[in-house]
Length: 397
Image (cartoon, rainbow, N blue to C red; front, side, top):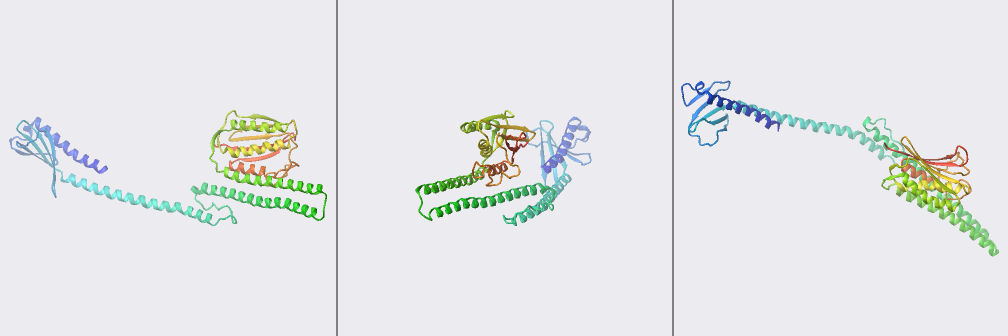
């Protein structure tokens, strides 16, 4: 494109000069040809050969002809003087043609050099960028669940620090997940082994000698209670699998306030069956978040079920929410006996009070909160007349 522009510009200047000379001749021919000869030269820096012709079979008033040979280039302008004669202006444009060719060669050289330079720079840059990626890849290749530790990001370029930090956060979450899995497996083995051992011992004692039918019935009832407890535990373990599947659920844009109101209607039925009340204090009126609703339901449901379980009859359970800067906080406040804050209630198989259960509810709620990028907490009320279970979600601006 640049070459075409230069070529047109150079030769257009020649054509313009010939047009100017032709117009000047038409106005004052005596200034150019005082001897009235058929061929004459117009004096200018590049002399123009002018010829009066009568045999040009062209209908156009003016036209341009370009003639090229091996060593010479000419531009000829032919313009009509009258009905029987034409003026032919011929200019040697060999120099201009040579200059244009030199420019064309220079443009090719510059373009090829620029392309090679860009390719070299791109290759150099890609190699520079690949070095830290290869370092990260090598470090990640050496990781497994037995030797899982955060990578050293001090040697990474500044551009790769966010990537290294993200990988370390992921590794930290994996470490937490692996730790919880180990705790869960050990806890499951212990929780199932204990009732099975008790059942086995009771059965052996019962079968040591003949007994009255009431003793056998009592032993069977005890076994059934233990079996029901193990079934509840297995159901909770299955819930862990369902929750892990829910972590891959596609987040949807949801009015969280409206969603909590719908959940509360279901909880009101559970509370009334246990002679307790549900109260709502939700702010703001509308809050749209992109969230995995299954995980949110699991957390709030666990909080409410615990509040119903540990609150006295005719008490009120409050579900509240508030927005503080970039944090959305959901709280479930009960009027129960409170908790022992020195215990880790979110560890698996940790039970509180004498209400029974598998001891996995809060453990699952914590996992769901982490999947949502939030945090859960449970503490006593300031007036010591109950507990407050809270979920804090970070809102991206």
